[in-house]
Image (cartoon, rainbow, N blue to C red; front, side):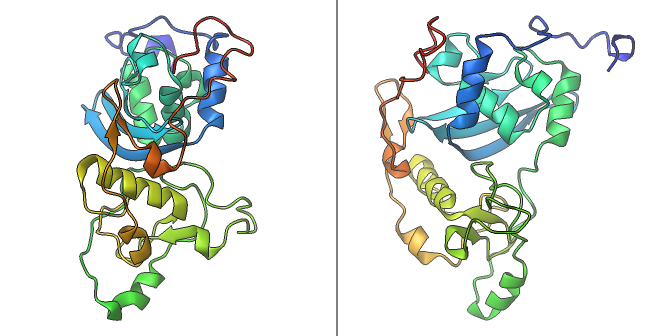
Length: 263
């Protein structure tokens, strides 16, 4: 929007960046190359200044909250030291699909937040139904959506070649049989379900419509019941994720040696 048509009361809380800084590039590369898992998304703020809080895990298995607001914030140590972290960049770029010109800003206008939230993928796709009658299974199968687009947990493509629908078979993709028909990567759903149970003891539900999950008893019965707290006070679900909880910093110092080693 041109400066002349902008609300004069809408002030940017941080200096405007006309282009990404050199320090931004390696963090952005890690945000796009590493795999993260979105555990929950919650809208906050007001209609004139909307915000979103995203619960996220990945990398070392720690669970962090990313708050997209006028000054985006994350509960990870790097962000709490006042830095722009990879979790914020992942949420902005992958989850909310913000314009690149907004991803590298340290402060956002209310107008820009409205643009981001209005154009972001929906959080949920409808109300729930508690029906579990096996006689309705066929009807539920008819609700299955086409296997296309992104997985709503990792925000990567459901299939490798969306044009042909190839790259993944039915064993690697599950869907909400109870209500909305949303497709998800099987491994992503397993991780999401295990993490939600370990962090809050919650019932396993569809990540999109929140209906109690049906149809994959093997997955539900395999969910572990506990996470652990790190010395820093973070919930860590590395065991549930099946990853090494120790951070690999081998790529952090390859080009930039200015203190980006602790994420």
